[in-house]
Amino acid sequence: MSLLTGKKIVVMGVANKRSIAWGCAKALTDQGAEVIYTYQNERMAKQLEKLIGSEAFKVECDVASDESIKECFTKIGDYAGEIHGVVHAVAYANKEDLSGSVVDISRAGYALAQDISAYSLIAVTRYAKDYLAQNSGIVTLSYLGSQRAVPNYNMMGIAKAALEAAVRYLAADLSPQGIRVNGISAGAIKTLAVTGVKDYQKLIQLSEERTPDHVGVTIEEVGNTCAFLISPAASGIIGEVIFVDKGVHLS
Ligand SMILES: NC(=O)c1ccc[n+]([C@@H]2O[C@H](COP(=O)([O-])OP(=O)(O)OC[C@H]3O[C@@H](n4cnc5c(N)ncnc54)[C@H](O)[C@@H]3O)[C@@H](O)[C@H]2O)c1
Image (cartoon, rainbow, N blue to C red; front, side, top):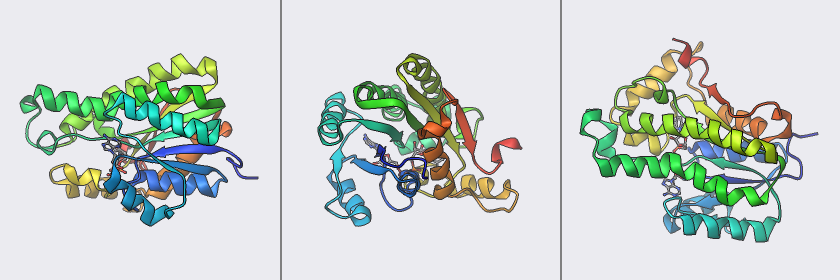
């Protein structure tokens, strides 16, 4: 018996085959779930189609817009009726705010990164909650830079700290309704998003060197934890951010 047989899970944030969201989608599928995909824009839709084909159900969702998120979940509700989980694997900051000095971050750059990378979890949860079944799960993606001053991670570290706080508050709000909100703090993985960070190679190198076998965590390993956290098997885990980084956070 698989963990998610017969469940319908929304996955937000597949840009290509390297995306953490793609690792999550594969693990959810392996556990028997039907995955419903959302994509940022038409360009991302084309990338997504290369992975899932043109027939699979997918919906546009730009998390910068409440209207887009609302419309997206209305379409998902019409299609699926009930859903059993949402994977929020979405973030953005201007490139200039992922290098140099934090004191130079502009008000506009700060607002943009917080909006897309942290507030979006709150907005997505608001529009998803009416369709989420009992004992369903929402999982978001964070990084160690929320707790430590990781060189160049700068603005995204500040946004991830807010995101992790949002996980706890949303979890407290929604657990009485049977919706569990949790996060995964993943090790550095070479994806499109991470290449926005200056000297990102050093970030990845660090995340490889500190693992026991010097091999960095994979999107499949992150995906397996995501599938577990979404599933009813994780019914006792509420408002937690779990490290899936092969121990990098220990040193
Ligand atoms: N790669 C890493 O090292 C790492 C480590 C820890 C956490 N994370 C987090 O994992 C998540 C997924 O990132 P990834 O590394 O797989 O990179 P990715 O580039 O594959 O995915 C980022 C996704 O965010 C989406 N996105 C950006 N702005 C959006 C918007 N306005 N509306 C809708 N979608 C939008 C993009 O379309 C893309 O699909 C992010 O939250 C990231 O911060 C990444």
